Image (tube, rainbow over all chains, first blue to last red; front, side, top):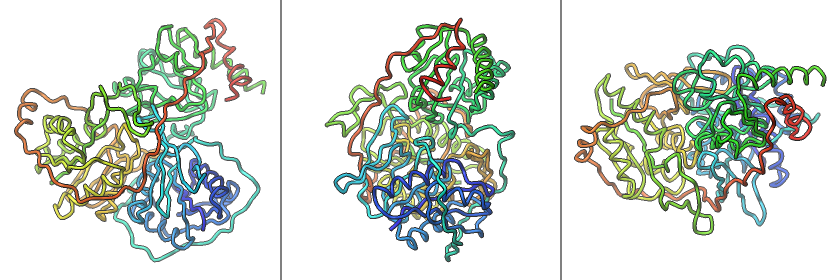
Length: 322
Length: 246
């Protein structure tokens, strides 16, 4: 019996969210028993394979013949690993790959799936209950899974992964499986070393209060000083000031960073839904009546054009001193 | 091209959420329901655009009781040719996928589109399950879709950037922002929708794989700590020493 983790790799790099999934699996195995096996594919380097061990895998299965993300091939590969390892729990990250492969595997195996988990499974009394966000972050649901094999996909940033010196045994895994029909034609990795928003621990976000796309420098400067990702409200992405993958909220993406700084966003219920899983929320707005202040931990009534540059300078000073 | 668009019902985005029956059921009282925005704005509208460009038909399919009819009429008003409602309450993503697969099997749809998730359960499950049950390829969270001949080309936002994926028809695709622009139905569309066919079919029957045992609401945040704008710099110290997030 083991806990199997699908560790997605893009161009041979294992995603940060996959290490969280490994650590989550380790914590799950402490409750359910068994060891953690990581499954990955492609040209993953030795350093990344080693890190899978550091975060909690005792065994790593790698299929080097599969080079790109193919939903059917990877579902079949995962199903073969479930069988070989006798896995009773399978963990994915709740990212586009996990959103494709976990439901496929669920239907293939008739195994219950809890998608977007934010807690470890509660296993008291022989039950298996996992919490997720529902209503786009406005509420939680506790899902009970009673199928023999259980599948969980983990929302990024739901727990802090801790590494140890532990190492995993690494084995090639090349079962006979049928191949899927999709082909990745092109991969455009994000320019620069920007942090993918769903994985970011710190996020600086802005809304219509910024008055125009040319004013985003002050947002980017603060984000850069902090090492944060940038985000925006829906109106801003709808009018094309910012790319749509930055839109957080009910119809954009839901994030749960450690720190969410929102400037010039009033805090409509739809926006709050996407960010209220954030550990700490800072709101900067000229309007003291902005509803967002009610959901904030820290608030500054002031003009983003003055406050953001001052915060940037303060962060730089703080970083220099620490 | 024969296009099937999966449509589900969701509470309006401004809805205040509450629960009944010992926190095991969503309280639908006084809730305004809409077509799930991802299904409507992106999957349906992109399906209509593809039909307008290349001919064919757009059928919507919904799993649910007759209380779903208003949102189905809305989809017809936006431009779908006809609609199918599978007459059973959705229990989990799997039962929905099973019912749609049972209906769509053998009907030769070239393209099955749906939103990347519903705004009520956010599971992103039905598309992948449906694809697996029908033995079709699946692309999740697509922001762009084009079809040429028998091939679909799909753009997808992934954590590392953007990925362009190609697959043969028939294919299942979950649609996200970027795919299309919302369409507001006009009076003619609304009138036409009244007489467009809405077929009600009986369910094949499927058992759920998971059950929601309890719902809860996030705890209220404590008092917000206000910082004087003149003293904005002190925020950084607070984030370090008090909140411990930097």
